[in-house]
Amino acid sequence: MFGQLFIKECRQTAKSLIYWLIVLVLIFNFATQLGNMDIMQKPKEGQEDYGYKQSDDKNMIMRTTLGQLLEEYYRESYSTYPIGFYKSVTLNDKEDKQIEEIIKETTGLSGRTETRKAIEKWYAAQPKETNAEGALVLRKSMEAEPVEGLTFERFEELMDEADHILGGGSGYEEVSRKSASVPMTYEDAVEEYRKLTEKDRLTGGYARLFSDYMVIFLGLLPVFLAVTRELRDKRAGMQDLIYTRKGSSVNIIASRYLSMLIMLVLPVLALSVIPLSQCLRYASASGISADIWAYVKYIFGWLLPTIMTATAVGMFFTELTDTALAVLIQGAWWFVAVFTGISTLKGGIYGWSLIPRHNTELNWTGFHDNFSQLASNRIVYASISIILVAFTAFIYNQKRKGRYTVSWKGFGRLKK
Image 1 (tube, rainbow, N blue to C red):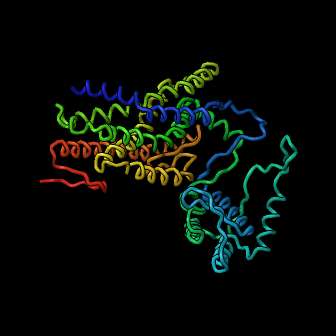
Image 2: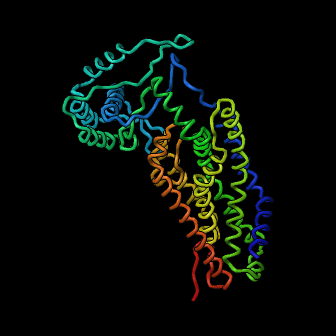
């Protein structure tokens, strides 16, 4: 019975216009973001630029953070992302004075005149380089020397205070202070390349990058498919007939849920073949032992729990209310998850977000050191989705028995 229901549900999904629109969105996302993916070449000594790396050196974190604070204080304009969108903050006199006091305590500089001189002095000391168009290029961002005796603990307290003054979402909040972005040397670049090709076996790093781009849309799109499927029978006036059919409610809901998961995973697997083949060609030419199963591992380990959750939310709230309320709920959750994850793009900071980010093929160390957190995150969301599906089956069963009705306002009522 379950097998027949599962095959039938897969066929129904394959006939759904919403499903094919989702597939088209995934293809468009892949083509625009990863369609021309460049495989990292082995660094050569003497290159102009080796990119950047994240440093957890406390002194460097203080220097770069304070450098940013000095520049923004001098400009009298602060860049923040309170809900993910850019917001320029201009302070009133009282708030401006508070920031000035923080700068004085952390750098010893007092007022904008001293700040301007410190900024000009720092930039004047930097190597003067130009790009192909003749424009001046700076290889690193402004840094400021902290005053002697400033402890990292006191620095963090003051940066928390600065972030609070700015309304949150600034470059001084805790999550932004986890590391400092610093230019890589040739030796740094070689080490990152070694980790990519040996630890990650090349495909692991690019599978993470693939997952990072795909998880954004997979945190939202499945809810549309689930809501459409749950409301289809109601729109067609087939609910009463379906309720009288043989087959347990658990089998019906489980087969419906599993079919949607499989049908959503299939196009992702198909798209992963393209970057996988690119990686394998490069690995073969460079003598690298690539992991052919890396993309499959990341799709099921990284992406599937997010797909499961978005689909389960769609099924549960649609069955509960007989409305499309799930789209609003999942949409709000998705919005918060995406835009609060901007500060975690470099990986290694996964937390409990529905949409964990790692927008680079590098930083194997960050991934490795925080793998247990990511694994816990994925297990929790997979568990939540299963619980929601179980409740969906319960509500569906109560409807079949006539014990649960939904009013025109979308609120259900259980009967004794």
